[in-house]
Image (cartoon, rainbow, N blue to C red; front, top):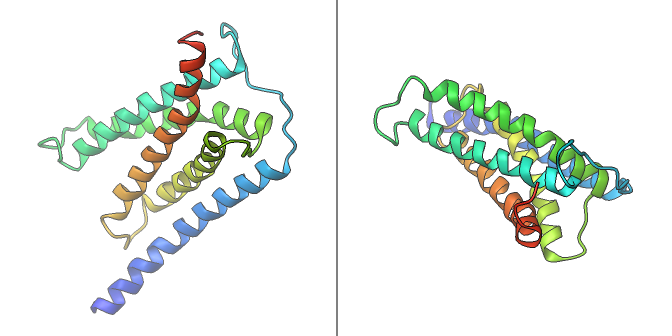
Amino acid sequence: MTAPAAGRRTAVALVVPLVAGAAVSVALGVYGGLHPPTGVAVNIAGFSSPQSVKAWLATVVVVLALVQLVSALAMYGKLGRSPAWAGPVHRWSGRLAFLASIPVAMHCLYALGFQAFDLRVLLHSLLGCFFYGVFVAKMLLLRKDGAPGWSLPLLGGLVFTALVGLWLSASLWFFTRSGLTF
């Protein structure tokens, strides 16, 4: 295969996941902006408030994302020899993180909507839309033949970075104001 043909194949392999991810990001932002916030929130028995549920679930997601980071580094041989446990741990911690993120996202999107009344909230809204968009792109790229080797780690790093930004702009903010209450 010639270099230009390989470059076209690489570009085609990236286009669909990236376009789908961008569409998800935009759709979430548009829906969040047009949908009037209901104030109805996700709550779980035993927690003092919906904000507490959201902060703690997001913290669980970040902890699982750290497991994702370590297991990805192990799978790519960055921590020495790639152990057999790295792949299954990476897949299952990702699944659990995604499942734990859904009530948080639903609370943010449905109860609060896309908001921009201060810089922290605007960044949080933008990062939330970006997080799910880049997550979709990463998931679609997983089994894509012809995708460059750097693309999956890059998208995984963007997912992780967006998630940490989300946690800093909401959960950490909540914990610094309310304490580590349930």
